[in-house]
Length: 171
Image (cartoon, rainbow, N blue to C red; front, side, top):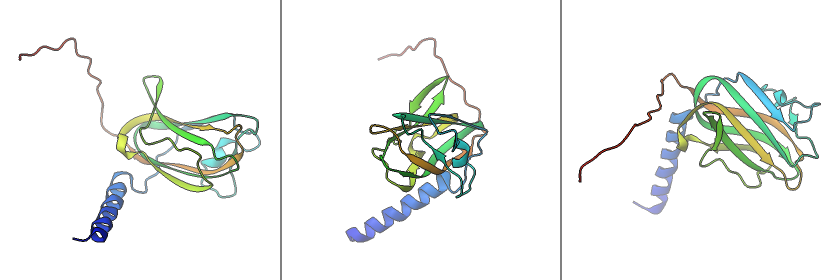
């Protein structure tokens, strides 16, 4: 097999795998909270599915964040972010577990560019009911969030955290 055929097969397999994991499903959103977002262009404009509305950062803020709450636990597979920016902010995506935020392994984006970005978060296989998107400006944020979609599926499984009292073994 030639290198070109191997590359094509690898690309096809990646597309099939990503599509099978989080497909085109957008996770339902129960509530959105925003910090350092312009009140004239509130965060709801980035989640309403309309190209005519958008959310804007407060121009003097060095950091902004959006907390997205789902109706229940959901398997997060990825995120689509469409925005226009002058400052190319760094973007971090985090999930909430037991009251604390933890970063997705592949979520950091240094200097995001204008337009639509698809961020694959499927590697982590995280089930959560809340995620947070943090934008860090250089030195301040300037831009508009046109649309944000969280991709994944509701989780219908029950998870139990195990707290072992001790571990014993033989060598």
